Figure (cartoon, rainbow, N blue to C red):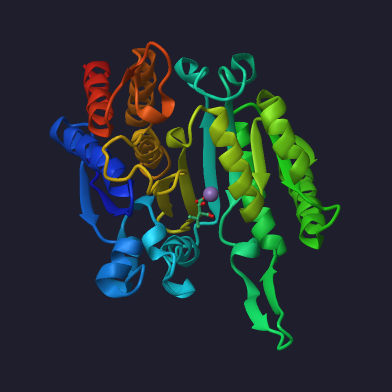
Length: 370
Ligand code: IPM
Ligand code: MN
């Protein structure tokens, strides 16, 4: 059995609490022949800033580059609001994405039947929802230069962010979306704002071109990003795969999260290009939720998004679909049995702690594997 080297970066707030449940699961899998994982752990985000004056150290960057996959918890919190922009907690995550060239961010939004009533939307709108947002992750306004605030000297300041995309960046993310659609319901919705943005005009053009050349078997639709947000809450089951830029993807995936009941449910995978010689690719897995400082330290956070992110690592980095399926099924049946963390509680359900939820998932994996 191959040994998989994981770098764990729990981060801040509820990050360490939800990561603890993944560690528990990894320990169980190692002990029961369900995999062979070696883990290293490092500080990242605000906790790293407190220890080292930066939110990411060079040593940790080297560990991340050497690992088979990185598992990331969450970063940030009000106590770091005043730290310099360059070393703010979020900078660590953006550097990992950029330096490891993790350009493709997969954010599946699945509504487990048991949770259809936890969403603020009507049951029939979201029941059995299964869509995938493919977000470009290393370009656009997140990284474009110039990115400045200038003093105009007349009592005014000017802030500039730059939205920039080259053809190759749009082409490669479009390919990821079309390839994934082929394993699903063969439909891609491309979302931009070509009615006001030049980057949207190019995005639209390149996606059409890639589609025509290599993916004519997949249905391609286009939706302006604002309309796409509206459709996501109106009738989300009309979508299969949505492909969009970095900023629209950030917003649309938070919207999609609420279709599943809670932000605490959404995992994500951030993937790089396949290496031609090794056939491997860099990857980072993280929940879509943040560090949730308001509930940190209380032991009540939902660990499901973090655990499901680990399952995505099994699927996309290690080709262990069987074990990934086991974990996903375990999550579904724990929910079906009525166990809920506070964020997804509903009438008649049993509210459990972070650790109890983690243990329940392991118990299910144990039974399903037997
Ligand atoms: C996300 C987060 C990040 C983003 C933040 C923490 C920088 O919101 O992964 O969606 O904006 O990409
Ligand atoms: Mn976000």
